[in-house]
Length: 236
Image 1 (cartoon, one colour):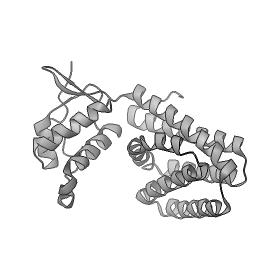
Image 2 (cartoon, helix red, strand yellow):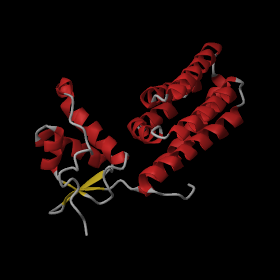
Image 3 (cartoon, one colour):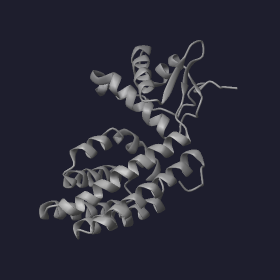
Image 4 (cartoon, one colour):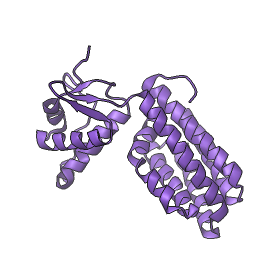
């Protein structure tokens, strides 16, 4: 039996939007709902109540409807006749996303190790130093930003725009995943060690090792996400 998501949205599921962002309201509603879905705040097959979502976010139902239509094109929700909008994101979907990301990122790391310039290598080293500082300070938000900068730099160094564009389509997924993962101090330490190993392999031009350690990193962090969000303890 399906249950209504958000009886009163249980208060803590979604934060109200900052009124400074009203000029791009539809985009912010879309990103807020997507982040909530991907971080596990909605269960698979939960029914979404548009009016309750609108009340929780402090907006009208118009941007809610628009955001839900966009989420449906991404496969995260499904609108069914006489049944409303249901959440379709589940552990199986998340696992497929993680494996796809691992394949793309590992190949980009392989190429970056072959093509990185001296200036880019220096930049990558600086980013790792900044990650060490942020990890020691216990700053998840800064680490999330540095994580994206780290991977973006590797994408640039790979000189492979096609693969980089494919990865960009997952960027919002990854931001949501990282926020869940970096809530764990032990995970932050593991991620730092793995990022340092990835950078070292790329900088020294060891393409096979760069590919392997990147794949292992994405898969392992993905398994952590599945455990936190879906209580899934099996290896991918």
